[in-house]
Structures are given as structure tokens and as C-alpha cells.
Image (cartoon, rainbow, N blue to C red; front, side, top):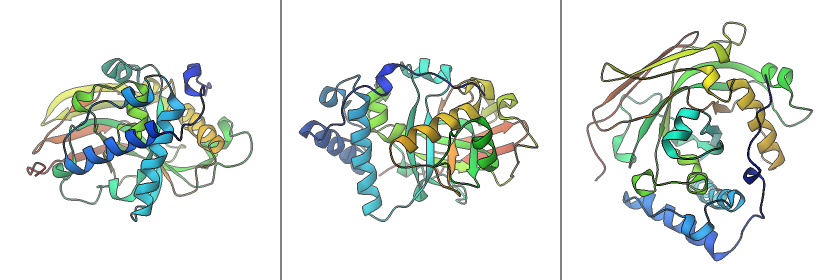
Length: 280
């Protein structure tokens, strides 16, 4: 694996505790609760202050935990150049996965919980060891992966029309929504993440394709970057957590009644059927 490099904006700035962060968190919370997308939050926190955006994300995560949610992992967002071009951003980001976002066991993905959903196919790594000490180099990160599964992430945005900059999506928990995991497990002895090929279908029609190499050159490199990033933030990855690698190809808009199916070499298929009921 080769360590990816990211723009300086990823680490520049001072975390904000100002009224702007509070106002941005309130705006996103109200949009999620009402089902009515809101204006971008960059007018409050700026379009480049990524640390301020993570301060907003932290506020929202704390509120969700206080309400009873449980953190089950992390997502790495904006790892695919194709998705970066789609959204007009130029660097990856990090979001938190909560237990109520996992709809793998549901007969239908609940469309009523979503505002402006899009689907993307990914690799989900399940950790068998903590990543909180040491160099977190290639070998250590690879050894920490217990297994991987094919995944569909249903990304969503509380911001109207997906009109986002990097700070908008970071503040909005990396534009997270829900996720679906396949039941088939594969170890890293059975497949190589960067060599995975992916094809995704919407109602039977091919709509997206890509490879593991589209994810920062290697999904394990993305995992290593994430491990170091969140450890530096004081919240290291733990055994049992799920990490969504980021998209292997372009994301596709989905809606009530749709069926999304993806096939990932070495990992197998994963399918999400969306309920016909829209948000009321």
C-alpha cells in the first residue's frame, strides 16, 4: 500500500466552538428531523475550514449518542475520483456509523428515513483488533482486518440539491444515510482489495462500475489513513467495528421501490430493495 496524501485544508485551522458551529448543527438537525433539505452550512462555517466542519459533525454525533445510538464503525467518504468529480470536492472525509444505520437485516431499506439518497458499492472491513497503537503501517492494518464483505452504502444529504463543498459534507456526517452488508465473509487471504472489480445495477440495468484501485489506489491504504486520522483525533478504531471503504465507482440516485444490486469479485453480491413508502 502507498500512503495517500491530502490537501493541507484537511488539517489546517482551529476547531470552532462558536455560534456558527452551533447554528450549523441546528440547521442540519432540523433538516433531518423535518425531512426538508436545508441550505448549505458553508455560509456559517466557511467553505474551507474542515476543522470547523468536524466540530459540527462532533456535535451531531454527541447528540445521537446521547439519544441512545451506538457507534459501530466509520465510513471513509469521497475516496473515488469519480465521486469527487460528481460532488465537486477534492479530498476524502470521515463519518461515523451508528447501529441504527445498518439495515442489512431489514426486508426493505426504509425509504421514509431518507431525503435525497444515492447508492454506491463498497468494501466493508470488519476489524478483529484495535488500531490504537504502533505505527499503523501496512502490515499492522492488514493484520487487524478479520474479514470483509460486499456493501452498499446509501449516502444521503440534508443539504438541498446536494449543493455541497467539503465542509458541507463533513459537517453532515460525511453525507451518511444507511448501509447494507452482505452475509458472505471473505478474508484478506482470499482476495486482494485493490484488485476487486465492481458492477452495480439499478432495477436490472447496469449503472456503475469500478475497481478497488479507484478507492485511493487501494482500499487498505484508505483504511490505514483512517486509522491514523481517528487515532490522532482521540477516537481510534476498535475490534469489531465496521469500516466502509468508500465508493469503488460512481454513485447513483435511488428512490422508493428501486432495487440496487452490486457484484464485487472475491466478495460476491449485495442487494438493497427500497420500500415503496416515501417520507411523510
